[in-house]
Image 1 (cartoon, each protein chain N blue to C red):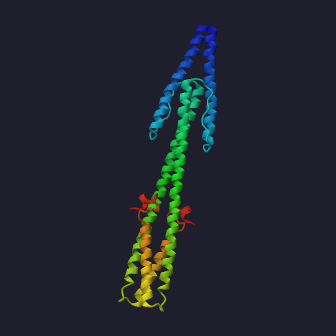
Image 2 (image 1 turned 90 degrees about the vertical axis):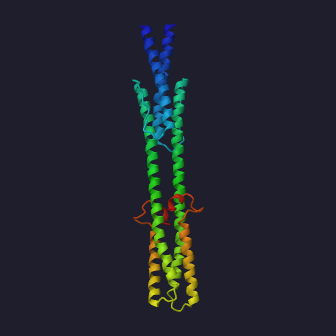
Length: 145
Length: 145
């Protein structure tokens, strides 16, 4: 009876330690290749170890989720900066063109007035784009002051 | 002798399980309050468990470091957007002012020419700011195309 208990107890202990050694390697791989969707796997029947491993996996899952959210957020912000930058350059080119036309001495007063009015509208449009807007929601907190 | 071995083996097993239960709680707190600099602490003398815990702590450390880097990166990017937005608005206001002055019929031809030249220079400056530059290194990959 005592021998049986000793074998059981030592066996359980050894299995537990063996399982932990295996999981340490798994964790090492997970840390090394963080992009993959690996979690720690265990063969144990010990409820306590299972709960411990579940917590570790929860941590890994949260870590990956957090990283994905951050990457997504950064990507969205960058996309908006790219959009804004592009949207700003188009009217600027146009304003430059009209200001060059205005140096033509053969222009009538009416034409000059019209071109100046276009320039002013385009400047107003540009200024508007640098205010909080529906078009660049991610940039709003940044361009509002 | 057998009794002694049994007590040793069972004792070690129980201590290990008790330690794991304690660490599960610690992990739970770490997950709940991720901002703190907590790591998992163990009282065990088992080398295998210590190595396992070291890996878990490495994961927690990497997670926190990664979060801090992401937050820093986002902050820098946002700061540059704020700077760019501010730097763009100042010349825009100035261009608007000169374009309004140009509608004044009492202006001499020389003055008109000068104001148009100022407008063009400011437009060129604005266009330059939307090109890759030393001033907005974080935004460069975004505003270069």
